[in-house]
Length: 301
Image (tube, rainbow, N blue to C red; front, side, top):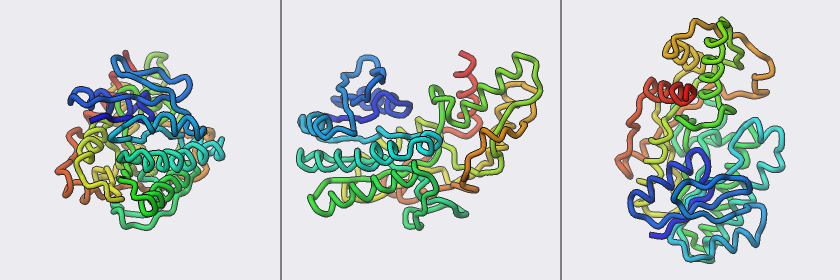
C-alpha cells in the first residue's frame, strides 16, 4: 500500500512512518519547511497553506493519506490563532478535497481537546466545546473533512487522541518540560522548579500506543467514523511532577510561575476509547510510570 504521512517528520509522525515501513508499506513523509526527514524514509515538501502544493503532493497515486501535520501547541495557537486556523482547518479542507479527487482514503488526526471542559471519560458522542484556538481549529478540520466525505464520497476516518508523550517530544509540552526542569534543578543543587497550574487532570498515553492505534485503524471501514484514543484513566499534573521528581531522585518542590499558567486550562480531560477497542482490539501497552521514566532517560541523553 502506498501511504503518505503529513507531518511525517514530527514527534508522532516519525514513529508512525518507521512503523509502517517496518510492516512493508511504501511510505513517504510529507514535510513542512525546515522539517528534517526521518532516516531512510522518502520525503516530499508540503505546504498546507498553498493550494498548488497540496494538490501536487496528494495527487500522486496514494492509496492512503494519514494527516498528522498541524499547529499542535496550544500556546502557539494562542499566540498566532490565525495561523492555527489556516493550517489546521483550511489546510485540512484543502487536503480532503485533493484526496477525494485522487480517490485516496484519508485519516485525519484531531484531538481530545475538542470536548472542552467536563468530567468523566468522554465518548465520541459527548458534546464538543473547544477552549483554545488549537482545539477549535481541529474541530473545524473535522467538520471540513466530514463535509467532503458527505458531498464527494471521501473515504474518511477521524481520530481524537488524548494527551501523549514519550522520548523525543518537544519541551514545549508539559512532561518533557518538567523532566528537563527537574534534572536541571537537581544538577544545580536547587530545591524549586517553576511550574504552571498543577491541578488539571489528564489522560496521558505513551506515543507508541497512539501510533499503534493509528496503525490498527487502517483496517476499519473509512466511513466517516470518529475514534478516541485514550486510556480512560486520569492523572493530575501535580502527580506527574511528583513522579518525575521521585524517579529522577531529585528533592525539589514545585513553585508557581505566572508566565507558565495558561489563560484557560481544562480542569479534566479523560477519554473513553470503547469504540476503538471494539473495532480494533486496541488497548494501551505502556503504564504511566514506564512512560515517565522513558521521558526522563531521554532528557538525560
